[in-house]
Length: 293
Image 1 (spheres, rainbow, N blue to C red):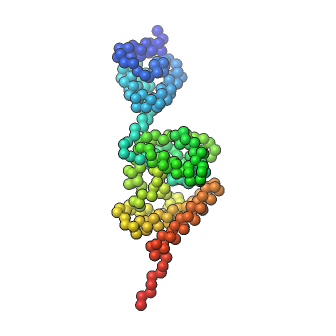
Image 2 (tube, rainbow, N blue to C red):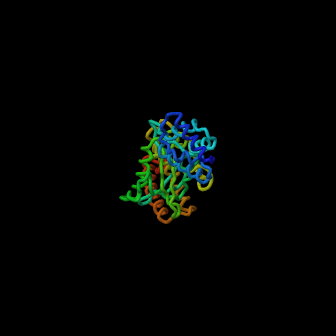
Image 3 (spheres, helix red, strand yellow):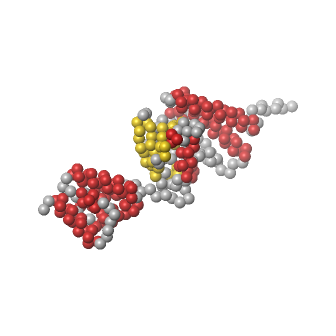
């Protein structure tokens, strides 16, 4: 009797003895023990795809099947399948977090920075990646104004729960890529990464500059503040705008960015400078101290 036929018979008998009807594709499980190496590899990859589609239920069924399998080869490959599948489980009462800063683009959003130790970095997202699709939603249709696609992305991420998956389609220098990531907990990440404590991070998209080196070398990250009064909030906003203006000026001076992104940065700078002047007036920071009599 051939090795592959022996394995198939053992696998089938194992299932028959348990009396359990698994939803796992039996032909793929049988092929895990085939004498043809390429067929075993193919079956393993297809089972991974099946398990990803079925989620937690599929992984549980594979685990039960692995416990009953008598063939070391089948058992080992089922273990590989289970290890290769990430089950995304939503955490109740949480909001999703990616860990990027973005610039708006008509019908898309461009990643400016990717923060360390965040879902975005773990998934391999990079600065200058253009996000063009989100969980199958075509962002090119979000084009009523330049911020629409980015605003939609922020709101969508914030509506998801920590632990849920997010599938992004990217344009990286003309090459289309698909990335899948597991969202972190927005509030937990903000406690770690928002030094200002005023809740200006929207939609789980971090807008603080990335830590460490390069153009961030002269930026001082301030400690988190709590229980701010109205004046402190305005001072806080002023500090944030000044930091963003420095950051964006350095980006314009040093980074190789497309002209359309540079135009957007300049427009944002103009709006931020106007807001900064308004804050200075409200805080009386533009007035010189009266001379003492």
